[in-house]
Image (cartoon, rainbow, N blue to C red):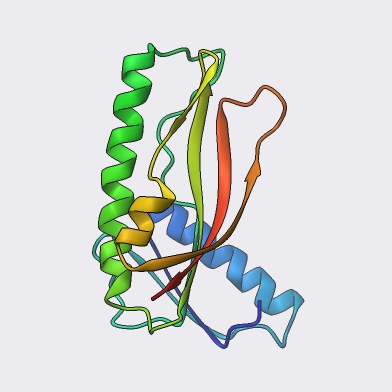
Length: 156
């Protein structure tokens, strides 16, 4: 993995337990990988760690949205607005635990619905919260409703 110590959190205990099992597998399969793992049930807006060098995350991206679960456009906009609020809170909290130049790699969703793309948090907003935009790559299967924008940011 390239890190000597890993910290992680999720609000879902099952997800934390699964991540621990995955990290145990990595440690067994690749003995020179990380050996210290700290995973806790916690909210990203209130990290349980006082400092980290970098953050890599695919945060909560809203409920399942696809052709089997159509929602009205207004509801999807509400979901995007709620995610914007969650991500703003996370970026503010992370600012306090990252060093200057610390990087965040985050998957930021946008929703391709009704012939348009509905964003969640904008790069301009993230920049206003104290980060420099480095790069991003959009990923989504053809016809996907959720587009994953894998984004690299750096604390100013």
